[in-house]
Image (cartoon, rainbow, N blue to C red; front, side):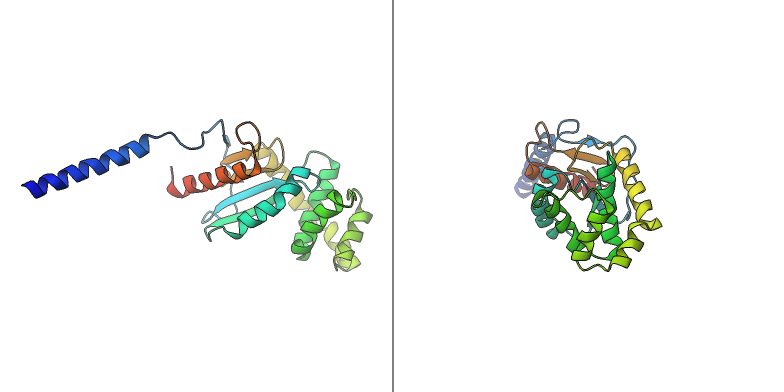
Length: 213
């Protein structure tokens, strides 16, 4: 009887701890630290949790974010997929989006992505014309004819259009922003004071998706 009472007491204490933990407020709050997207956007692979960075090569904050997010990406578990999607509000941003998808089509994202950031922010080469962009690709080892073919290809122009549509569907108002599983939008501002805070909230939302809460 005494043994049963001890187990009963321990069980009650355990349930009390669980109840207390569950009663605690969430670390990050919807409407304050992140937004829920009104109409969730379909992700590429429903078997993975997709995290999307909306960026722009011309954005100094995106440039500063790049080393941090690259380090974060290296530590992601296999069930989380990280993708980048260019933001676009004007013609220059569309050209920069075209750079990203042309590099992807040519299989040189690993070379060109960092080079594009550096050209703009270190060398003050703002990559605003096709000829200047072509020189950058050629200097990265891409054959001129291969660049010409990719730059104006249907696959690249279609990818740029899809990125623009995706950005509008997300409701993105600034870069860098991040979207978790097509459902949650996180941006720096207000209580999200730093880019480190941004990634902490993204990690929180990834766990939220994993737990189904």
